[in-house]
Image 1 (spheres, rainbow, N blue to C red):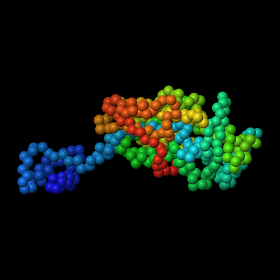
Image 2 (image 1 turned 90 degrees about the vertical axis):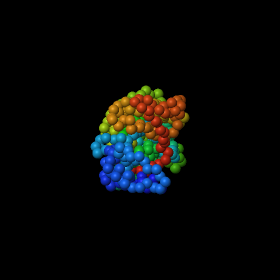
Image 3 (image 1 turned 60 degrees about the vertical axis):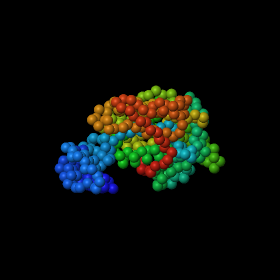
Length: 383
């Protein structure tokens, strides 16, 4: 009890006299108290020492900034985000169309149904101009050289007059991941160095300005079998669904298309990573938006996990090699791997992860694994 009291008292004295956590306190401030008080009975007095006592009043000091906000001693965290097409679905099989729709948009009278007529068919009020679509169990069923065929059960719309419009994408896998990660980045902006990379795609995928780049979509539910649809006189629909020119699982590494925020090389990496997390998939700033894409079919998920782990390791090594700061020995580097399911190709991501559990550069790095199945608190992105 006496020892515990002495330690607590020493900490209080250090705080009272304004002792800096990284500098030794005045020798007299410690010796004066230590040797003027008698020791408990039966205790042999310690010999006097000729050096001061170092006191750290805040054990979390290593996670906090110094006076200069540009200096961070916290860890480097690289977010490896799955942006295959399954991330645009929710756990119930709903596909969230990747572009908002305009009920007043121009159209081809020969081949298309008037947009306002389509919107009314989907229950969009006349006062609403924009709306978003969701399709139940959308599947790419037939792959052709010029166009693809899709099948779905139901189609629903959320107008901009609805309270759910701004948070429409929050319940997709990607939306849930973005919301939770944005909150984590925002709360640790000045402590942690964040970076970001995504799934390999053949092209620099961006949502087209006009929705409905894929068609036809045939609905199977009897309650909607006779709806008028986007395609004139065909009772068929369109959807905004990004299909690259080649499969994700077959792509080689391209830093320009994969690594969006470099954790050490960019001084504002954390704020840039947060900026990427703010944007929903149909945001007009497509150059800083995560867009799911893939050549999925009814029997194949174009979702490479193994290459995502490989690319994370590449980013880790590069960041560690670029980190020449004097505080480098105090800083760990970790990876947050966010995926929507298992490996879609033939590779084994589990074996890859085990072989990549540490990376050597100037020191070792531990790679951790996570998932996007648990829904975090939404930050409510909007168009």
